Amino acid sequence: EAGVTQFPSHSVIEKGQTVTLRCDPISGHDNLYWYRRVMGKEIKFLLHFVKESKQDESGMPNNRFLAERTGGTYSTLKVQPAELEDSGVYFCASSLWTGGPDTQYFGPGTRLTVL
Amino acid sequence: SQQGEEDPQALSIQEGENATMNCSYKTSINNLQWYRQNSGRGLVHLILIRSNEREKHSGRLRVTLDTSKKSSSLLITASRAADTASYFCATDAKGAQKLVFGQGTRLTINP
Image (cartoon, rainbow over all chains, first blue to last red; front, top):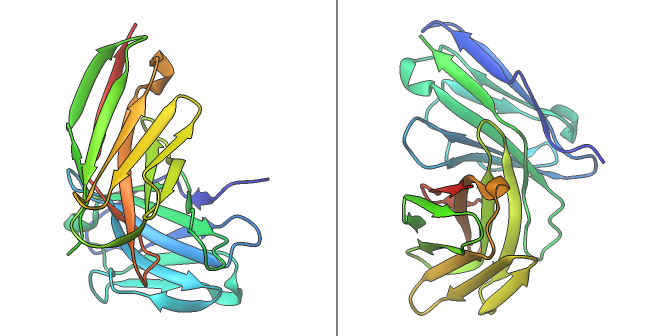
């Protein structure tokens, strides 16, 4: 079974540009999460989808970040316009949560560098 | 806000020794999970312990949870070079599924 995949693995852009990150969850997982780790800080939650609906977007830093999950399959996270402080590693995770303990399976991450 | 904190931040031991990492958190939790991250790779789930459990084993891993002290420990026995990685604890609060991570412990196993 394929794990969570993310694309691209690395992205280097200039301040003010737009970047779109993609996450493909494990097949059949309704729950999809985005997290990020900026330099020297802990991994922080951004948002949570259940199928195509945003269940919790309390961690989104500002309105420059837009996440979508059309059709309830893959998800995209767009940063527009990118700022220097957006640099970091963006992780996606998915789970099959049905009410019990929720084991989240993480992708390899996308390393974003904003120059 | 709830936050996990690992202790120590870095740990270096000889192959074959045991490694113990600790994690503390601030609010009530449903579950606590430990993840491993090898350099440049994603997070690998190691073990989950529920709030009503006190100890759990998985192969060479032993996790304890003390909800009265809001702390957990991860013990890796008979360490191997391949155990070199960063280890993170993550908690999910009651009524929420999002994970709150600590800053991690960087473990180095010396051959």
